[in-house]
Amino acid sequence: MSGEKAGSGGILGPFDSKWIESVLPHRYPLLLVDQVLELEPGQRVVAIKNVTRNEPFFDGHFPGNPIMPGVLVIEAMAQTAALLLLHELEDRDQKVLFFSGIEKVRFRRPVVPGDQLRMEVESLRLRTFHSRFRGRATVDGELAVEAVCTSAMATA
Image (cartoon, rainbow, N blue to C red; front, side):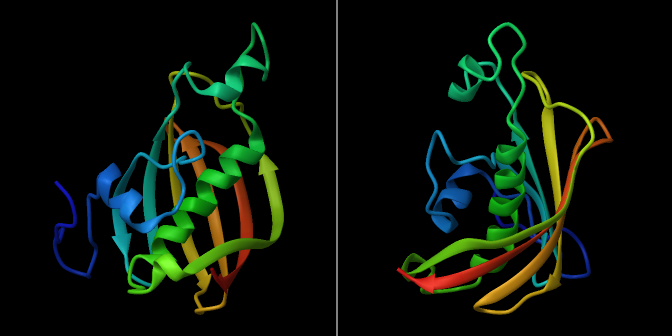
């Protein structure tokens, strides 16, 4: 199921991987969002990343004790935020989003194979060319990573 209205308040979802690939330019192995559970246009988005042992970064981080690199958890949150920003743009294939800042980052627990990473991102300032988001990534309700990120959009 993809793109259904889920009750009142303008919350959309769920969205599957095909929809995600229609919005984001990322592809495996750097596409880090598997499903969007909720999307409230202009406000917030909730997405899932199923963390599996066959992710290529686990071979070197760390052998015998695989841990998802924290920067990739932040990237997963940024991709989730990009879905909020890009999903309504008709010319999104002509745009590229870049990090312009990462603040207040806290790593609270490791993310390991078998975890389901839930990213909750809310808009602090949503503008076409400069946006700011607060993201939280949890596993089984336990906070793994939190950060405030800013992005800049450019024409491709």
